[in-house]
Length: 66
Image (tube, rainbow, N blue to C red; front, side, top):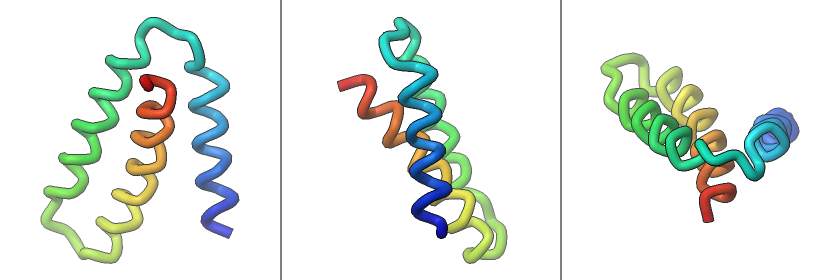
């Protein structure tokens, strides 16, 4: 089930940002957000869920930035 949701995240980013000139900026923001989430001093299970979602978004922006 999670895979399907995450695939929707990826598809949404790819569809919305393909060919846009600001992809690199969004990638930087996604990477910064990911680092911030990873640094949170909260329950590791909750943090892991947040980080996993952010990783999917970061990866989608990275695909567009290649």
